[in-house]
Image (tube, rainbow, N blue to C red):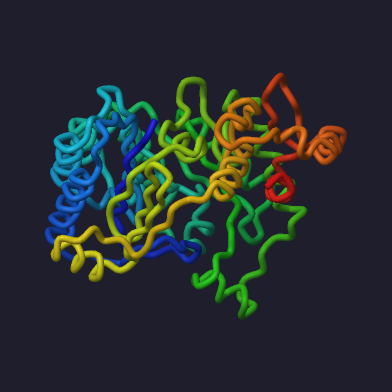
Length: 374
């Protein structure tokens, strides 16, 4: 089922590794919020289908810079323009340094039922290196405040393969996350994205990234540990306790439709993809002129849809072969039988009935396998 995504681009401080569109700003948000309300209305006017949406996700940037009144107003606008399921999953990404129990109680009263905290690490030196604005203590307090406010579905983002990070230090992060009673963990390897301060630091010799073998060992440790603790790995980087899989994540991984609002947001609907202007001022100007603030769009070809389906499904729940044939034509198993058999023999793929999926070993070479099947 489809979802709704709202991009709130403001941050108190941009992290050295982040390549998402964001702005360091404490300015008044009134103009931005008014424009976001107008974009919601314009998009609803050109969407004739009476579709039900099962998830709303506030990402950024730092959406938790919004007050409960501001966020509640956006939710009211969505509810007035779109059919939102009564039990819809509503997630807000939070920086632990920007929330307290009162704000989170306001979010909960507005309908928020899931929070995602960008913790990254419980080590002070890691947080300083990553240019995070919160402390480990503030992260723990924020998670406790979420639970006290009545939000029981809490995700933590944690980051491994930091320079100098040992298995022991990474295990400390996982153990703290478990002890705090979180229901979902997103565990990512630190990636050097072009154009970021981290990329400049690596290029200038100020930072040395860990070797691939170290990254793979920490990934193995993560999978082993979280499996033992009964967190199910339902996507390469995402792990959930029973009943707490993120619906909005699954919208992406199942290659389903979603609408995006705000600067740089993307959307996909009925075979068309678009992306919004990645400039706050240009986005504001377009909306003020009564235009959808798209920077570009494309009609997705059959080959593109096929390739993306393979990549997204292999990274998550696996490819149900009869569904693949129904949606995209052709028999994937027959077309790539020799390669698939070799991956099964190497312990990288498994065929359970009609579903082809990655093994633990295969996850480590996911991109290579996807490329071969595309």
